[in-house]
Length: 240
Image (cartoon, rainbow, N blue to C red; front, side, top):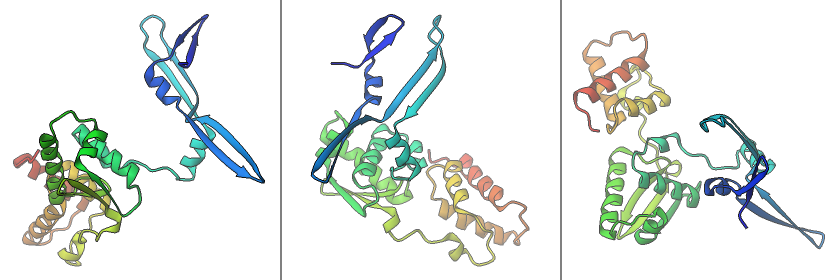
């Protein structure tokens, strides 16, 4: 039986998307020869206020279940890397979601191409889907754009390797010398937005070389100077 929503004095089935949000979980505990089963939802309660005249939403209030709230507070949930929202292709985002679910914090996870296609919900011919995945793997090998995991494909088997377990990228400061302007990791992250498609570590090396050639002028804000360099490079020769 579908969940019901009471509106004034009428009752009607709620929409599929709302039913999805009200999905129930079941947990069983056994202690002292007694088994206890708890059934609860991800969302305890939701309240939406709309204009009756045009349906425009005025207010939305969601109360999470105690289980979800405790999981979030204790950091027992997997988060999405913020670069997930910069993945432009829907199937790339789906690949990340699957890797996050099945690989999580483990070192690696493998999946066959045909099964990956089914899980991504792609209706493309297998050869077309193979070409799309291959392009993602090649782009990740060149630029490391895929969040959290390095992606490779060999003989129609896709391997996701957790980047935290891989050898980290060379520290650009170590290669540039002790006198090079310091750029923090957050700025290196922002540089990917300023110059999409570029290897920001290679851009850093070029910027430091330019800084040396200019006689090492004092920089009031190395961060702003480097991001400006990246932005101009993208404007002159955009890769995306």
